[in-house]
Length: 156
Image (cartoon, rainbow, N blue to C red; front, side):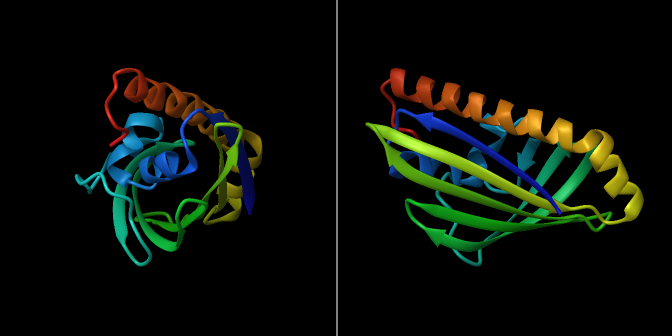
């Protein structure tokens, strides 16, 4: 099992960040691996809801079905994903805590490769790409939320 943790402090409240990052329609705006999602409405998804996402991550390009397993607004959101082909599985957890006048957003990704060969590739190449992409995602999230804030529009 591979474990990747990324964290950033954002100027928005935990509620604002939670509502934005737990709405799958927003994912392509801030996460470089997220190409499209089968969701157009910008609301946060709750327990049991599912969404399909087209991704390009760590050399894999395909669809992942995500299911919300935990939703404790504004502090924690957990989803599990199953790749449509290849058998890869992942768990993604978002944790938010108030920090200063903003929020610390921590994104934890745990994933298991479907076979020994892919596990070896993960150790050699893929995990490094995944860490880089996770860090880029948080920087892009800061930019997207900052633009929404400076344009005086609510973070949809």
